[in-house]
Length: 339
Image (cartoon, rainbow, N blue to C red):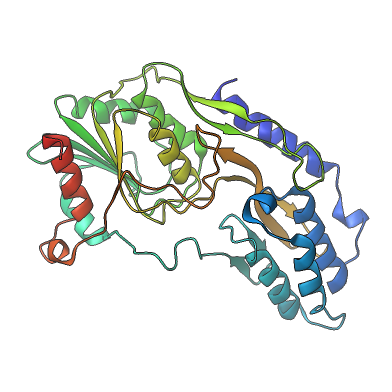
């Protein structure tokens, strides 16, 4: 089964599962019943209870005691949001017309390891893929190294744009792919880029889906593969630059690229976010977004809490004062001289 088929299968399975569960048929719009609906949706469908060691029954008792029938919407939202934050998952959002809650603990206490102003020094005079500021590329280090900055996988890159990029880099000795501060987006976009770095079908991970309402009811892992693009390929050395704000599809991209023998990652731990997200509606019209299907690495291990780089490195003040990016400079040295 191809990587695209796997994702489609997971989405269809999840969608059919949720369509069979209409919260409006079971709960009314009172504060207590909306709370119960939220707790039940997550109880039956969230995918990381066991991995994170979360006692969801204990969470129910902790927060139901705070629910009062005469509380207003703001007060109800606060309690329900606080309960979802216990799951420590950046894919979880409680969404109302007046507020959206989200968890940022996956990056908040970590070095930024990224300076947009300095980054511009490296692609200044270079090129932009399509109409997007988030995708930039250039030849750097006296045209010996190719450099791509992909700031969000929400932005699509066309196959013809990738061909143009790799043709420009044809005579380069190495390539830097910078996904720092890439908060994710479409797995299709990240896979389209990853497919340029393999010349044969390559196992790169696994995915599971829920098979029942129990917290550990999951299918056996299904393999996910990177398949070679029909366009221009790059099989020479690659460095992928990471920081803690690499999340979701970017985290998945780093996991896949890490399988390849010609790829080295430099920077910080990624932010994680390895659960396939889905959104469901509560009786009062609020929505909750959450992780449903765990995507595992090639060793069938979770990457929900992030991926360690091959070479851990942070921006040095003496470099930034000179307008240099420590990670990019280290990547250039590695690609040119092997150290």
